[in-house]
Image (cartoon, rainbow, N blue to C red; front, top):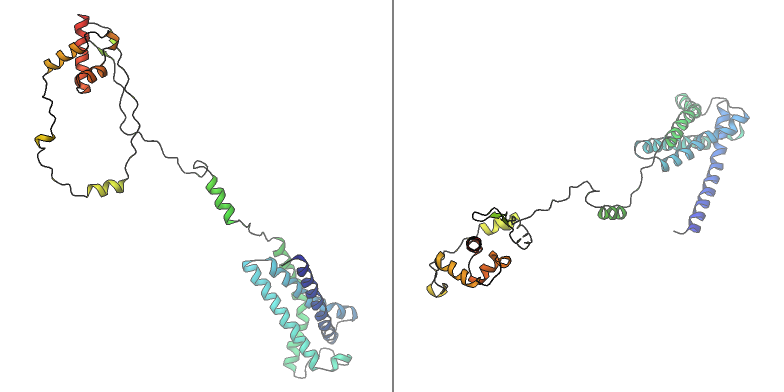
Amino acid sequence: MNRTPKTLLVLALVAVVGMAFRVSWNALRDVARAIGADHTAATLYPFVVDGLMALALVATLVLTADARRFALRVLGTYTAASLVLNYVHGLVPALHQGSVDWGRLADWDPANWALVLLATSLPVGSIYFGSDLVAKVLHHRPAPTVNKDESTEIVSNRSMAEQGEPAPEPRVVNAVPIPRAVQVGFLKSTVALKPLPAIEPVPERSTSTVAADSTRPRRATGRVPDVARSARPKRTPAELLEEARTASADWPDAHLTADRLRKAVHTSAEKARGLRDTLIAERAA
């Protein structure tokens, strides 16, 4: 709703409440005179009853929880009391001219005593309940409102360290250690090995995937057929050494590495390192 309709609605409500208060003020003033109030007290009496109703209504709009329920009880009690006194004013025509006897609001004595007690206790109740409502309103602290969208965006934009969650530690799998220096033969000189190329870590497989793979039945594999086997005959260490001597005969000492020997004679890295150590020892001797 726009601002202009809201303003008109509030003004209309104030006008209706003001006219209703004027009607109730006439009845409550006559009742106050009947219970012995002077002219000034009778004029102020309607403000005591209906004024506390307005105060309780405002407190109801401000307070919450138990304090709000207390304000609603006060509003309901004083509304009922004002209604009863207005009803009595309509039933007793003598109250209109002020010719009724003091302290006489009904012909039946028990009803008269109850009405007089009600009319005289309302000012005292206004002092107590009005002070209590004002204290509750002054000490009320409204709960801060948080926009859910903004709070979600703030949490998502925060880093894991700011959110109090430990950052996952990097885990390296299949790390290859760098080989140490090797002393060859009777020489005390140390030959530096060529560092191996860096191997990227292989990501770990999740537990659920490993568990699923482990439960799969493996098919039994039979004997590898002769056609699938390598046709190259198995060489003895002496034959490998002879091939290595022939392949590296014209190599300088700086090029005599295990990797070059492995590629030249087509053997494994472990055997290539043994061939390299043997050839270096032969050249040194």
